[in-house]
Image (cartoon, rainbow, N blue to C red):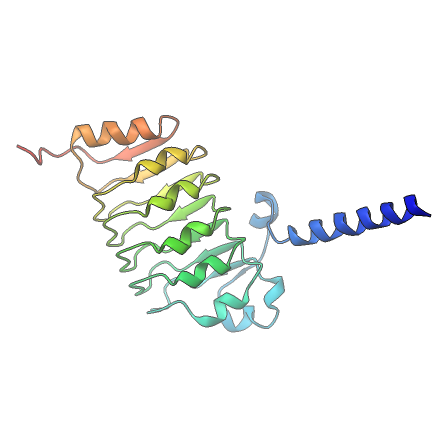
Length: 201
């Protein structure tokens, strides 16, 4: 009787482990999921919501209801009036896509770096002046859009972002040595720059 009991225990653990990871969807499955554009509608069945688009709603803060969507894989907060991102975003641990372009963000909270399953991140057209050192935790990130920010500091930890293939840094002033240094940190990444400035001239 010992062996069947061990088998049943193994089967239980296997099913439990599978269910714990069920919320992290494969790319094809995620693309086929319904996109909710109303938080009220999404909260009617919060466990069934994988994509939420709250862009262009003049939001000044991230609504509390968003954090009830524990299976959220994609969140769009673009074209709002957000001045900061809450640390609570770390609770959305299955996020793979996050967009918050065209807001008024000046910083990225450290807790954001706990979203280690992110594959696409768009923070373009904000007022970011730097990135946290913890960005090296984004080891699955493929696309990072930082176009049109006030970025001046880039942490060396960016070298740990081995999966990164696309980095948009256009409309940000760089001198040639700075551009070369960034490319050396990310040799496998296609980095888009605007024409270099002669800032030191």
